[in-house]
Image (cartoon, rainbow over all chains, first blue to last red):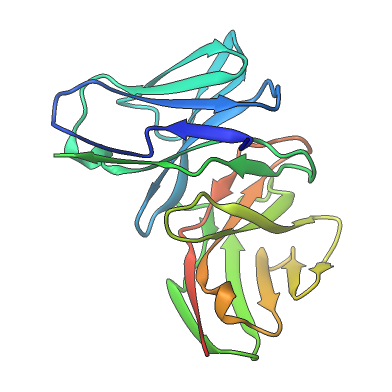
Length: 113
Length: 113
């Protein structure tokens, strides 16, 4: 099993719709992260969680919310999707080896029409 | 204001030659630097890192050099192989155990057979 599993892998939705991206992990880490990648802009941190009761905003949290339902699950929600939220979304958690290293999921490609 | 800068969006190199990818940073608090590699439709994968107490770290064909006074790091790939063709992201963090990574915009490397 992959360390980090993201669902859905691809999603097309319409402006104004609510969308949830889900992330689950099998490693028992307390920390989990959500990043967004746009072409030519690299990856930017949206939200991160140190444990179930500790949620923190990242660089670009506006328009997003998160839920840490359990240690293994960290969901990202767009309450009312807009076209400029079209992007690749990655969930990540600390790697087993290597200081400060994150392991990323395969990503969720979201298109908002 | 971008704290981690990769000023070359793309780089083409002949197979067997050296690839040099550059990265500059502005935040003096950064003390861990990482390189990630990303293929299309996959999440970023960790390649190599360096702590600010070192000026060089080597792992097989990959070497990262850090020049703290210039706030500059570079990734050398020798010899370059077609399978190295990917987007390379430079990332930085401050403090041991900090997984909040700040990424550059990425450099797309094409290794020509």
